[in-house]
Image 1 (cartoon, one colour):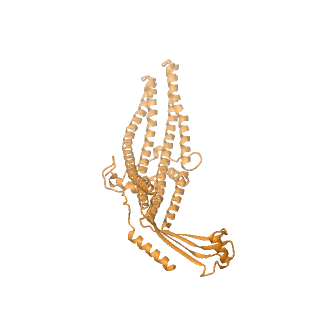
Image 2 (spheres, rainbow, N blue to C red; image 1 turned 180 degrees about the vertical axis):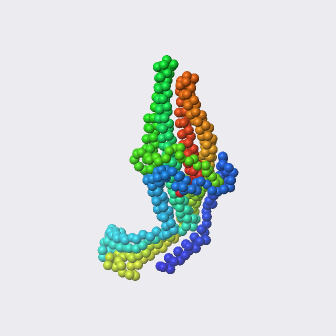
Image 3 (tube, rainbow, N blue to C red; image 1 turned 60 degrees about the horizontal axis):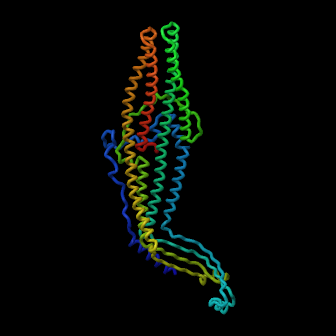
Length: 472
């Protein structure tokens, strides 16, 4: 029996070696999906990018580093992504056993009572002098499918690509969380700065209102001046509870990102002391595959699609399966394990070709090919979105810097205008409306300046994320 088994196995291995081939050709990642350079970026062949920096080196503010560290450790969405990686790893490990024969241990006992008038019953009674027959068997059954057309090999490739893809999904999620935490903190600093501006403007309006009241008592202005002055003061005062509300909401949002219940967030720096980075090195667009997780994930999705095409194509061809059973068998328990008399063994091998379900298998193959075409388009779209986001961030970094320069000049001009307007008003050389208008313009400009600074910091963060930074 062992000789027969060895012969069949050797024949199967020989057939697998001779016939095994790649029944489907993989589609490679399209090289023309990338432009030569990013729009709004200086033409360069330098492959270095700010995305190569670890987030602990990109962000220098202690408060932000602490918040991001907490988010990376405790964010629930990231922890779910980690569990998905574990699941994908289990599936990949399982796929490695595709070429291993399936082995099952069996122990069977049965009894049969044929009718007295049946051929079996009559012969049984004559031979054994009994009306029933028992059967006892124990042994091992084996089943193995030869990977002639690369089906199992493609299953391994697909499982491995899925595993790598789950890692890229987590990386992409982390880049988004890192960016959102930093932008949320910058927004918090902006709200703090605007709250200070609103409080100072209320104090400034108080001083102006006192002067107007003195002039009213002296008969130099009407009650309309007092009313307009009070209205402007209330307008600035109204901003205070609104900004305090927004501060609390932003703190709560940061708490959710960092996996904690809503609480206040410590700020050891002010918006004005945060430096806007001027390093905007981007590298070349083709490097997005290695740096940006969602683009890498799209590339891996194409590999999964290639594997699925190979699997469904292999289903169209005959499958070689070998089965074997061996053990002990007896119709009497006393002789069940009488070796070697009770030994038995069977070996079978055969090719199976789908017939009635061939249309279904062919349809699955055609669907797999279309899904692969979709994967190519999805990859192109992922690259398109990534390049567009980088270009958007680059133009924001450049133009916001120019806007801040003009706005700073405007604030300085208005600050000097208020000083001059107050002096002229006190000396009766300017109308109260000029003073109130200058104060209103200054309030608006200072609020805009704080917002521009926050947008600059956020634009740098967005460029870092768009290039694929934040997961290291």
